[in-house]
Every structure is written in structure tokens, then in C-alpha cells.
Image (cartoon, rainbow over all chains, first blue to last red; front, side, top):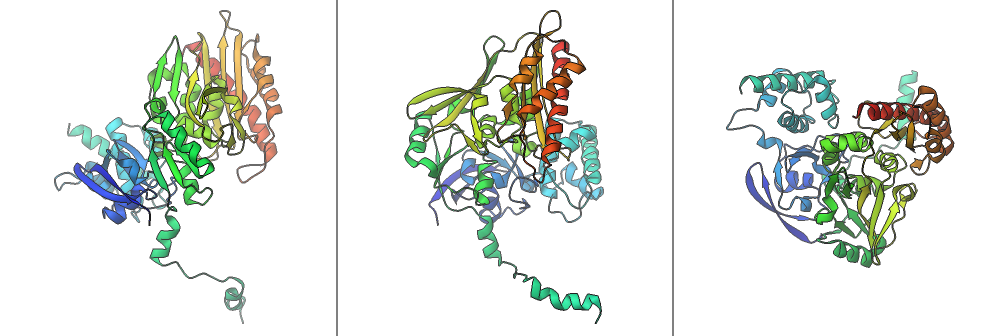
Length: 160
Length: 322
């Protein structure tokens, strides 16, 4: 076992410190050390987006980030999307629109879609398909996911 | 005995199905081998770490290539030197008078997200917008794309047509190299022991100039180019082509500057026929392989088509002041 390195981060608004080996990905540490298992492992090589988290506000594949690189960083995972016991509009619209079947890709889609709506509150269908191209779903055929993101955008605009 | 039953009987003798790995074994297969990590604070520190370890050390920028290569066993290292915390490595300095200085570890999203660069270096913005998906663009850098030296790298034709120069730091100081001389083969480049890419500089944009990069992939997004083409041109006051640069990817062991096609364009009017002829001339630098992405003849054909389209869009942008 390699030398353990101390890393200080903020995860979902809480200060979090952990020990990790240099070779461990952020995904491994989130799931196996911190037990934040909402973030899923899909391909483990940066193609599928199931492990998407926000690193300093930007969507990244956590399988392609070393945990030691997260020193001083702010991380948001799917566990941080719901607020005060209420589902985020994206989560509510995914549920109501049945935008998931097996669910493995869903946390990654939710995090990436949240980043998209933070950047562009009124995305076109093309914007959604382009920006979410780094997230792969083998169940839904994407249409329901795109519609759920559009519904969530409308709901968020209406409540502003 | 029915055919189906006999197949059932014989199948186990032909194919030995391995038992599924235990969860612990599966985790070991997926995990990276042990290595050390060092975040260099200065260019000098990175050079001394890399020079001391030689081939057993690699640079870590965005990590979107090296971490995959380590996990898949294509490379092994004892030390990763993270260069992102060196201030020079993430600069993005632009002025219309002096041009662009781009730190080698500056991630793609900062390039295409910069309004000033969309007109000044449009081909570079086109390329950085289609490298992987958003998650990859948050981390992957143009310097990393260059140093990974894939023949199919999307950003390299853009760097070539924008006449970028590499600043390379090493044990004997800093040297410069035109970007078209950087790649020497698939996954190989001009970096020597202890050297790493610090930055790329670009000359200021000329008036009435425009550029474009495009590639052919069978999907809409998230794929590796079957072939790619970059084009840049500047028009004179009468609207004729005053200067031009054309480059190709995924059609040779390295991305290629198409010198003959570029020279042919100078002095010509920016017409469909001229661009078609430039595409034909550009094909001469193509020496592609046949692989699962496409046969060699198809890639050569694509090179001509993509160069014509890249030039057409570059000319539109030059004329419209995009």
C-alpha cells in the first residue's frame, strides 16, 4: 500500500478531510472511503459520465481526477443536489417523466444537467443534447432525459 | 439430438467461461498501480523532478489521457508531476497587438469560453469545443492534447494553422519549436529527458482573417476523428487570399501541415473551385492507415472534402469579421 496523503476539501458544503493514496481516483475515494455511493462507476475511462461531479463548479468525470488533485477544491455530488428535504426540480422532473430505467447513469445526468442549467437557464434541445453528450444512457433513448431537463428549466424559470 | 441441444453440449468444450472475479479482485483490476504524486510549484521544480526520474516520470495536466493509459496498462510510471499549480501553466493572455499566450495546462473550456478568442482563433475554439464532452473539456488541455501526440488529436491542426510556437522548458533552459515540428510519430514527440511543454504562443490575428477546424466522426459528438482538417486564411483589401495555412489530422502518423495546398491558395480568389483544388493538393500529405475507424482510401477522400469545407467556412468568417 502506498503512502497516504492528507487532503482537505469541501464536499456538498461541508468541510471534509480524508486520507488517500496517490493512485486513487476521486471516484474511488468518494465511494469507498467517504461512502458517498450516489456517484456511480460506469466505464472508469471517461466515456460514460456516470461518475460526473462538480469540481470547483465544473462538471468532471471523477474517475479521471486523482483524489490528491482535489486538495483545496469544492466538490458537489448528486447527494448535494436536493435541498432541505426537497428534491431538486431536475430530480422531480426525472421522476415524473420516467427519465430513467436502471438508474446507473442518472446521478451523472443530474449533476451535468444542473451544471448546464446553472450556466444556461433556458437551453434548447440542441444545447441539452450537446452539453450532455458526455453522459451515456443505454436505457431511455435520451428523449425522456432531454424532456425532463426542459421541464425542469421551465419549472425553475416559473419559480424565479 | 436436436441441433440446439448438441450446440449446448459442445459449447463448454470450445469456450471456457472464466468464473466472475470476486469484488475484491474486480477492484484491484480497476485500480491504478501505485505511484507517487508531486505538485510542482515552479517550472524549475518540475524540470528537476522530470530530469531525475527520466522515463519513469510523466507530466499530469488534465489527466484525461494519462490516467486512462495508466489504468489500461498502456503506460506505467513511478511518479506523476502535476504541473497545473505552476502559475505560468494556466495563463491565458490575449491582446490584439501581441497575440495569445496559452499555458500548456489551460483547460479547453477556458479557450472556447473566451469571447475574444472566438473571432481571433476560431479554429482553436472549434477544436477545443469537440474534444470529448463537457466533463473532459473542464480538465483536458491543448498542451496535453499536443504532448499526447495522437495522430487524430483535434487541437493540433488548429495549432498548426494558427502558427503556434511551443515553449519547452528543460535542464538547459527554455527552447522554442514551431508546433508542426513537435509530433514525431504516434504518441511520440520532440520532448527530451527532463523537458516539458510550458506554453504555446500565437501571433496576433490579421485583419480580414478567418479559420475553422472540423472532423468527420460517425456519431454526433464524443468520438475520435476518422479524419480532421484545419484551415486559416487572410484576405487582402481586394478580397483575394493573401496568406493561408491548411493542416490535417488522422490521415498520417502525425498531424500534418499541408504546405503545397497552403502555398497554392496565395493570390487566388476564395472560390469553391480554388478550395476544391487545395483539397486535392492537401491529399498529397495523407498516408493513412486502415483501422476500425475507416479504410485508408476513405480517409484520403475525406481529407479533400474536409479541407474544402474548412476553407469555405474560414473564408466566410474572414469576410464577415466573425
